[in-house]
Image (tube, rainbow, N blue to C red; front, top):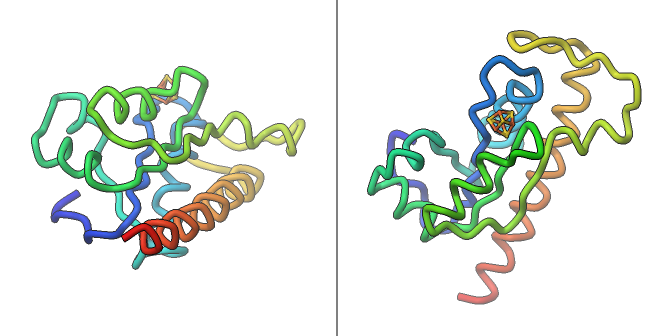
Length: 142
Ligand code: SF4
């Protein structure tokens, strides 16, 4: 996050998952949402900033609805957003998306295969829909 997110944007926060294909998928799904599917409705920030207690990052998760995307059940993004006082409106796990893709070969920690991109895009589309729903709810509440 280089600038403060727009007031009503939804923050999509991936885990850092280095060295695992599921971590790469969480990051790529986030970029698909924030850069392609819902750039006007969403933003992201670096999980490491939250972990080290950066005041701007902590303030951002406290004042925006957050969707976390974690590579596995350790749920590092969800846990750290919650620990920082953020509001996790939806917690997504990449591993869950494989239930509909038994036997898929998603690639490795540095590159996704066609299978990997198909699953990653499904995750991103689901997150973009959820972000739109959350944003609509926030506008009704306001
Ligand atoms: S949620 Fe899993 S893949 Fe992501 S950073 Fe934590 S341990 Fe790694």
